[in-house]
Image (tube, rainbow over all chains, first blue to last red):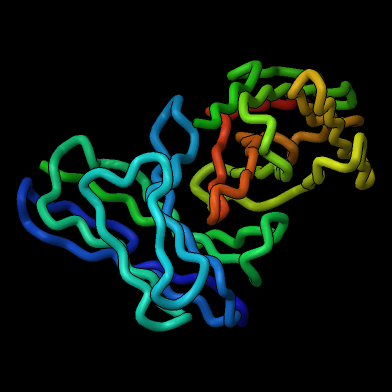
Length: 114
Length: 113
């Protein structure tokens, strides 16, 4: 089944404890992206990747890192999480890096930073 | 940078009525405008999109219009049904060397049976 998967789905952690949220797609998609969703703010793009080893900042990259060593995986790294990073996170991918390609979203990861 | 404003934030309609959600964007370089539907507890899913060289697109009960001059685009849902109840997000994508996508804040649509 074609899909985007994220792990973990739920995470409660404490300030300063490094964590990684994994994202994987099995559709051979070139483009991958991370978003955070907060009430009243919609979805805000954190980082995106046009292809392997090509990443760039979205609108809210502060406090986050990403890597794209393989086409299928795009992990989101929080080196020192803070309470303001408590949010619902979505990974998404699209077939090519074409601007008008549909983005397929993962199921989301709900992160709470105490 | 690009900014997308979406109105209204909440919309309540009677089943069978039409619903209209409006968005404006600021960067004239934006050239792709998707609409996503997110049901409660689920992931966003694309329902319709429009490219900047097209003024209108329709898919059954859903239509999107784009006015590039005014930097407005709108989602129209006709003959609404209770299963249309969800949060709808508009977005604008622009080429900055990569492709950035900016979403509106969302509209919560309630369709009353």
